[in-house]
Structure formats: structure tokens, C-alpha cells
Length: 261
Image 1 (cartoon, one colour):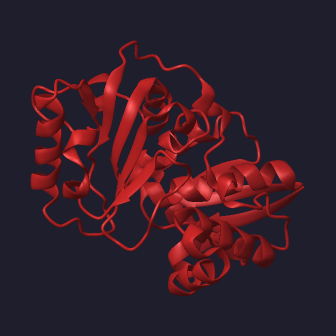
Image 2 (cartoon, one colour):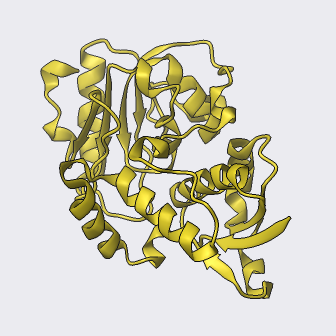
Image 3 (cartoon, helix red, strand yellow):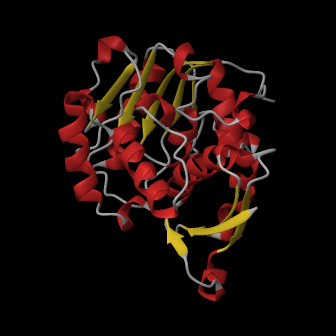
């Protein structure tokens, strides 16, 4: 079996997107991937990988010892602006984060001379069997509020917008669990939830409001999306998220109609 070496030097969310590609590609092609990334992410990514045998994680610093080729699979290494333009040309109003990564994954497959497992945007919805397992968390909530900070882009008025939104939900007596601790509010950190466990727990919430950051991605899976009333994604860049009628992308949490909460 052929072994292909890949790496992503960026943050957890970027590596999650890479692992989605690698796990699906390994199943389709007779290849083994060694994926070099930040070792602080290994436990969570291995939990996501689950029983998939075709992906092995390696320490990012070891990438310097690997003989070429070693493929950089971060989207920013493949002319992100050009990918966005191509997406808009092909998909028009349907162009969004999903089509960006669809195009990227086809580019990567072409570079590595392997078959791409993805044909359309819906294939970007996470499908790892590890996400299908039942959560260990018994409680249910009206809202999962993914209020963790994004490490790559700036969110203007981040603290005040998060605080205002949370206060609106609590004022309406909504039950809420957050991913960054706010005093007096249940938090995934209280229960030592991994990103995979957060995604499992999300199958039992009615709505998600999410900063565009790591835990968001795995919640965009095929078991969570059909069960939600609303999936609001906060992303101040031009990037949009649309995997169904229940998706709304906002550039500011202030755009959310308070009467809809």
C-alpha cells in the first residue's frame, strides 16, 4: 500500500477539515496517509478518526525529516483567493465554505494522483462514524453556543457580542451550554468534552449559534444538521455557510432577529 505524507501547520479547525478529506480519501483509495500536525491536537483528531485505519498522525516538527513529496493540504497554501473566485464562477449563489473545500479537495487529489471522494457540496458535511455515537451527556438544551475564540481571524466586539447574545437567550429562559466558560452557565469544559463529544451532544440541542472556530466544524455533521431548528454561524469574513434551510450566516451576532431566539 502506498503511503502519502501530508501536513497542515495551522489551527485545530484547519486540521479537522484536513482529516475529513484524509479519512474519506483513505477509504476510497488504496493509500495510507501520514498527517503531520500540531501534537496538541492529536488526541481530539484521533478521536475523530476513530476506526479509520488509513490515517496516522505525526508530530508537525517531524515533517522536516520527510523526503519529498510531502503535501501541504492547508487551503491557504493553494491560492485561497483563486479558489474563492473559481467557486463563485462554478456555483454562483451556492458558493460558500463548502464549495471552497470541495474545490480544494479536488485540487489535492489531482496533485497526489488519487481519486477524490467528493463530488458535491453536501459531501463536505462530516460523516465520520465517531460522530454518530451517543453522547455521554444526559442533559438537553435549547441552544449550544459555540463561543470559543477563533485563532485565525479578528472578530470585532467579540466579548460584547457574545455577552449580549447570551443575555438575550437567558432573558428568554432558554437553556444554554457554551464552549467557553461563562460564570453561572453550563459549559462543555465543565464536563471535559472533546470536540467529538461536543458534536455528539449537539444531536440533542434544538439550535446552534457558533463562532466560526474548531468545535463548529464537527457539529456540521449528517446527524446534527437535520435535527436543528436553526444553525447560526458567526463569520465576519465574506465566507458563508449553507448546508440547508436551517443555516444562517451573520457577520455580527447583532444581525440575529431577537424575536427568532
